[in-house]
Every structure is written in C-alpha cells, then in structure tokens.
Length: 122
Image 1: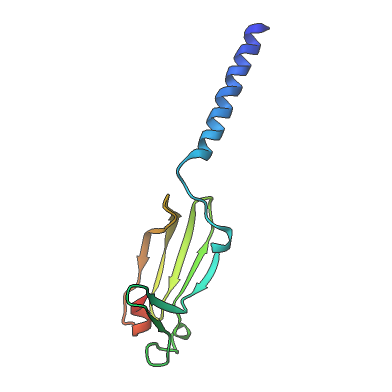
Image 2 (image 1 turned 30 degrees about the vertical axis):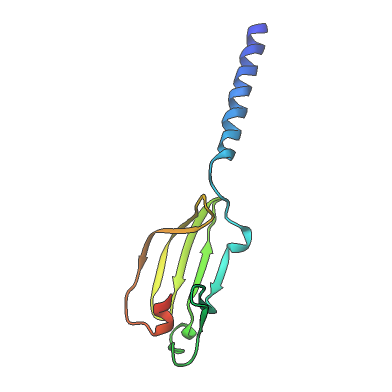
C-alpha cells in the first residue's frame, strides 16, 4: 500500500503542476466589458491634438447610417471573433489579447469598395 500511496501522491503532484502551469502563461484575458458592439465616435490624433468627428460631409448616411462599428463575440479566455462594418465595407476575423494588452486582429477578410472620408479613417 505504501507504493500505491507514493504513486498516487506523485500523480496528484503532476496533475496539480500541469493544471496550474496553464494559468501562468504570458496571456491576457479578454475583459468581459469588451464583448459586444462598439461605434466609432471620433478619430483622435494625440500627437497633433486634433479630433475628427462624423459629420454629414465626411460620411454617407445612407450606408450603415454613416457609421464605423466593430463587434467582438464568441470569446475564449484570450480571444474570439471580430466583425467590422465601416460605412461601405466589412471585415470578419479573429482577435486575441497580446501579452502587452493590445488587441491583435488576424485571419480576416475585408471587402474593398469606395468609402467616404469617415470610412477611410477607420
């Protein structure tokens, strides 16, 4: 019985080490408040201290209400799906949160037709 106890303790130690080593990876979790749909309200140039807002002259209201929108869905702990709709084009792909807390978008496809200025900024 002593050998069985020693073996079980060793297996338990291996399991615990393996289980918790997965939690120490250099990965960042998707913030829960990030999931959902987002609308661009301005483009800010922090270097030149300028801000561009959507106006009737820089967008086409008849397409997507003239908006640029982004949606994050189907999250795993560190990524998920992303879909983008700017004024006249769209994008679908995957996203992950990088170790330095940036959203990295990959494995996507984007349509490419004419855009007003507001759509091109996006």
